[in-house]
Figure (cartoon, rainbow over the protein chains, first blue to last red):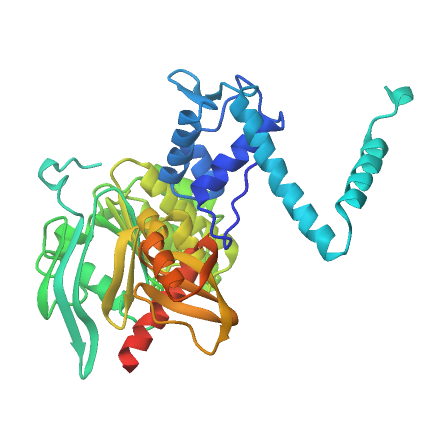
Length: 131
Length: 307
């Protein structure tokens, strides 16, 4: 599981884990039934307090994204719910806001940005003959 | 792990009203602190603030001039064996016998500790990449710190005490030290007390943080609580101001002209209202890292001292 802790921006570490797991689930890199590392293993890997990992897992559990299974540790239970969808929207909103702020500073109109998004969408879409 | 039922509810370390004077300098000024069982307790403070003096009291290296120190319910000066046999300790100067080889030191230390585990000591030796036949004085500073850590951990002490363990060490050794803290606490019921001025590290591993400055405890609370009570509010005023307004609960202001931001240790809602009463409006509110909280707190102590 690809999780990194960055310090200095004031986001509590437990919340960074929660957000990144949500992101991994929302982007399909964690699927239903996938197992999260044990609390101890993730704490040792990230070199953070195990209580912090436990708190993040509790938070994810109460959000319905993972469930603690006595036999199989903590597993992903939910990816397609409105909640995961809402997470996706939240993640995208943040990125769009950053993009718009940057565009405004460079004197780009929103229309220009939309044009650019459409052009990039066409550019990165897989071509039919490659399928 | 020794099960001491009567001690389970007691704090592992209880320091009460301890003051300490070195000639004219007041190194500790009426310090009361308790380290609950099973937590990672981070002690932070600028250089010379009293961290090491406090830790020396815990280890029984200094006798309390006033007040009392109890570790596992015992006085570490009166009962050094009873206390030190249950503490693993790594200090900044880390004085190990330089003429001993790594394997000799391991054999030498074993009889002092009934719980010493040869298997665990060997596991640590390999994990730290320590050659058994090398003399300690020939090791790098980082490798010497790893030897100190091995000796502190090999008997799985109920309390691990680290005084500025990371000072002057490279990131790889620091990671081993933090890893040792994490593993110690992951084993149910064990406790860690460590001092550091590397606040990123404290923030990663501590459950509870106390800040000491000029010998006094500035704050002492669970890390979550400290982070929840300290926030940064940015206030925009209609007119440029030469200086920010005086508001209760603000530890430090920075800014200029129309925008000033305050680090506050109060309920943000009340402060928001107070800022608005001065004609400003709050344009942003942020969480703070331990670093910023520390700087603001230290600045506030200095400002009070000048008044």
